[in-house]
Structures are given as structure tokens and as C-alpha cells.
Length: 432
Image 1: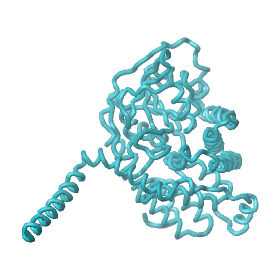
Image 2: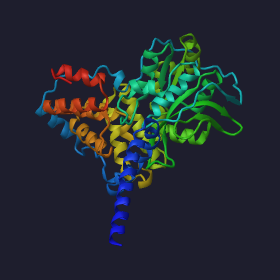
Image 3: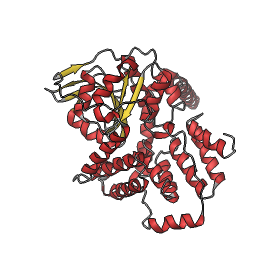
Image 4: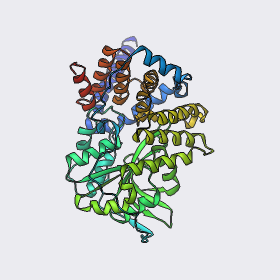
């Protein structure tokens, strides 16, 4: 009897070991790992946030800003720190553009559906690269999300790709052109689609499988006025996803109504005619700032938060750093008033404009604190190279050069060969 029990236990132990080994081997098959790693990551996030609720990690701007700024300026005399090349950090790509007249009011069809897009389900953290490659497929680009991700996010743990980086990929690695604009509206989206141009939008997302609010990209390639909805190629959910006009407006606001249009160079005149005055980048951002100003009076606290956030981003682009800093102060003061389940605690994963605003108004401690809170909320992998980058600049301005070098090197861990970090390290005379 005892011998049989020992044999049974040994067999059970052996079977467990075999199952574990097979599980590890199977998980490491690239095709399977890409499918399930996302769900493992989300489960890990749920457990982490249950133990350390994200609403407890709140950035609060210094309440004595004027005194803090003066103390900083009295203590240090920072040299001008070039943040070039800015386009690779977060900036709209420049192009030779001639502003055109307001788009013609010529009626467009009530329904348009563009075919020719090859749908892709995203791999781990690959929403941006997948959405970009899907949209490029419409223009017969020969590639997929592996090709876009290899340049946009060589480290698969990198959580975000900026719109400007996606446009830069198109402009530098394909024969097509891409522009990024803000302050869009539904009518403009429909006019582009009706003219044969799918549009990428950046928007908020809340849905099954996610723990709280996230940023997301979708490629819109159709609309139907009768049903009041767009057709979206969604890398996370499905191909030909119907998205209501109301949902687009609600969640698009979270990202300043940002959109990306890809087109052949021969079609640039058509694209600029559709844009009208928004072809001019300065006008476009000024217009977006006005839109945000009108939304700061919304009754909904989260909508107010994003309105102030958007206004800050637009004012930074206009180099009104003091106005932008004030806008972000308002956003972060409203943040704790948002209902816990609606908190957009990942907002700083997808933008760096607040860092610009605080840095260029001498509020280096606010840059440090904001970066610390942002990195804390990335769980065990602080995979936000932009936060390390701006924390490095703030540390240098406060006299901590060795800390700045360490942060710039950390940025390169999450985004190898990232040009802004390499540039700053070279300027400081440090090796990557």
C-alpha cells in the first residue's frame, strides 16, 4: 500500500513537471506568446492595481508655484537645453504646405465604405504599429505590424507610439506622405473617407479585458449617416467594427481630436483642400485650443480634465508655456474629483506636453514629481522612455547630471537607439 502511494505521488510529481516544462515551451512559441501575453499582462495589472489602487498615486502641482520657481532660479542658473530633434519626441511633422480655402460645402454621400484594408489583430502593446500597417495596406504598402513595430517600438514592452512617430515612419520609410492634425470633427472625417482617404484617430478606450481607461488607435474607413456610425478597423476588437458617431466624439476628445491622414504625394493638393485653413499648422492648433477652451465648462469632470489637458497641449505647441502650465495645473487639480472607476490614470503614458509646459516655465520639481508618479503607474516595467527623458532634463537643470545620464540610459533600455536620448547623452559627453 505504502509503495503504491509513493509510486502515485512520484507519477503525479513527474506529470506536474512535464506539464510545466511543456507549458513553458508552448508559451515561448512566438505565435502563441503574442496571443496570450496581452491577457497575462492585463491579469498582472488587475492584481497590481487591486493592491495599489491607481487613484492613490496622484500628481499635485506645487501650490506655491511662484515661490518654487523663484527658488529654483535663485539656486541654479541652467543653461539652455536643446530638446532637439523634437519631432521624434512629440511634435507634428512639418511639411511644405500651402494653406487653402475653406473646404467646399459640396454635399458628400450619406454612406461610404472603403475596401482594400488588410485587417490585423495587434500583438502585445502593438496598437499603433498595427493600425498604421493596416492603413498603409490600403495604399498597397507591402508590410505588416512587424515592420512598423521594428522601427516604432523595438522593445515590445514599450507601451505607446506617438502620432508624430507614426507619421514620421510614413514620411521616411514609404513612398507615401502623412500629416497629423488636431481639433478634428465628424464632418471632416467623413469628407476624407468620401474622398478615398482612410483616417487614423487616437482616442480613449474602455472595454472588456482592460483594467480602466486606455489610449487606442482606430482606422476609420467608412461611415453611414442613416445609422450614425463609422466603420473602424480595430486591431484589438475586430475588422469592420461599427462605432457610433457619439462614441467617436466622446472618446476622441480624450486625445485632442487628433487624426492622421496618409496619402500619395500626388494627392497632396486634394488633402490640403479638404483640410482648408487647418492645412496651416499654427491655425490648426489655435483652432484646437479654442475648442478645448469651450469644453472646460462641461459638467462632466472627466470631460473638463481632458479639455484642460488638450488646451495645455495646444498652448505648448504655440510656445505659450506659462498658459500651458496653468492649463495643466487645472487639469491635475480636477483629476481627484473624477469618479474612481473613470480615472484616466494612464493619461501621461500617451503625451509629453505637460513636461514641456513645466520644464519651460522652470518648474523642474513638478517635472520630476510628474515623471515619478507616471513611472510608478506602469507596474513593474517603467517602459515610458519619454518620462525618463524629461526627468533627465529636469535633473540636469537642478544640478544632478549623473542622475540625468542614468535616466537617459534607462530611456534607451525601453527604446533602443532612440534619437532624443542619444542626442542628450552625446551633449553631456556620456556613452549610451
